[in-house]
Length: 245
Image (cartoon, rainbow, N blue to C red):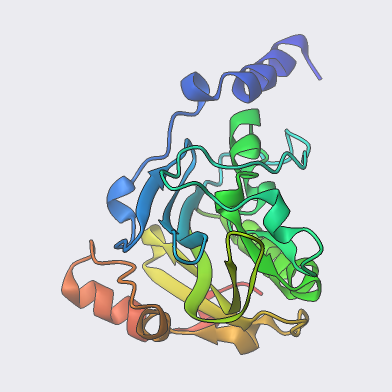
């Protein structure tokens, strides 16, 4: 690796505000019934009642070099939450993983992004077999898509019902999780709805649904910024053949 190239990479890692800039396209955010929080590279709506985000929004950009920063398990409270976020203690001995909503691997392009992905506000109680299985495989698939084109990702739990509550803060354990991917340049959209259990990581397409279905069970309007005709067209239809599996 040349001296110049090595120093360019170091510059991008340790000076993210100058080299990469902050999260753009805030107009793309879904509607919010919780506290709207912006970190440098992702935004979310925090539900105090459920002690987790109802959705998180981030971008994958094909020109971002992932893998520059190693994962560090720096789980900690998020001081931006006015009522206080869930804590590490809430998850201890609960039997559930601190499951990332914005994947740490998606944030591996610089130190700020990686560090912020470990706020407890970005965690949700996931069954270990789900978090380390089908959810992880889906995250990897979305990253693969993001290497080819810029896309927006919205992830979250379905908070209409809880399996149980854990910890002193009574963190809701969701029965289902969703992930929505939108590629503006190609005018295509896809959604996944997965139960919080082991799942079938070899057949992700079985969890595909349209965005309208996710909106019905979450009461979240994800793409209200789009004109009505385009929103209806994209949210009500899914063409699996447009996506590379």
